[in-house]
Length: 330
Image (cartoon, rainbow, N blue to C red; front, side, top):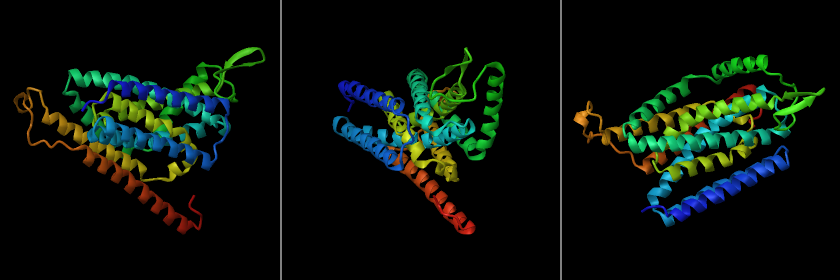
C-alpha cells in the first residue's frame, strides 16, 4: 500500500510547527533544562514517533511502519554519536551552559537542512543509478571500520587546525552574547565565538549526514520515511544533550555499537545491490539470486541488539571502574 499524499503533507506541516515551537522556546527562554524537563521532552518526542509509526501502520501497512521505526532508531543511534561531538565542541569553546540551548538549536537546524539536501540527492541517485547501492554499502563498511578504530582526539586535532586558521583571519571577541554572530566593541563590529562554534557544528553535521543518509537508505528508499525518521531523531537531540551530559563520553563501547549498525547496513546494501544487479561485469548484468534480502524485522532486531549490548556493556564497565576507584556512577 502507498502512504496517502495528504498524510505526507500534513505530517510535514505538523513536524515543522513542532520544530518552530522548539526553536522559539530555545531562543525565547534560554536556560539550563533540568533533568526532569529534559526527560519529559524526550518522552514526548518518543511518544510522538510511536504515534507516527502507528498512523503509518493504519494508513499504510506494517512494512512502512517497520521501516520508519528501524530508520528512526538507526538515525537516533547515529545522533547519539553526533551528540558526543557536540559535547566536545561546547566544552572546547567554553560555551556558557545558559547559551547552549540556542546554539544547539542552530546546529540541529543545520543538520536538518544538510540531511534534507542529501536525501533529495540520494533519492535521485537511487532512482537513476541502482548500482549506487554498491557504493553506499562499501562506504558504510569503511565508515564502520573507521568508527571503531578512530579516536575523537584525532578528530579534535583536525578541527583545531581549522579554528586556529579562522582566528588568524577573522577578528573574534572572547565572550559570547547568546547565539549572536556579531557584536560591537569600542565602536568596532566584531564576530563572537558563536561563529566558530557554528562552523564546527556545521562541518560535524556534514560529516554525519554523509554517514547517516546512506545508512537509512539501507532501511528504506522512501524519501518521505527517510526524512521523517531524521526529523524525529533530531528533534529530541537538544534535550538528550542536557539529560545525558558527560555520561555520553563515558559510554566507552557506544562507538562499537554504532560501528556494528553501520557495518550491518553496509553489508545489507551490498546484498541488495547484488540481488538487483545491473552491472554487466557482475554475473553478466543479471541479479545474483543467492544474495539474501535482509528483511526490516531482522534489521530492526540487529539495530536494537547492537545498541543495547553497547550501552549495557558500557554501564557495566562504568560500575566496575567505580568499584575500583571507590567513586559513584553518575
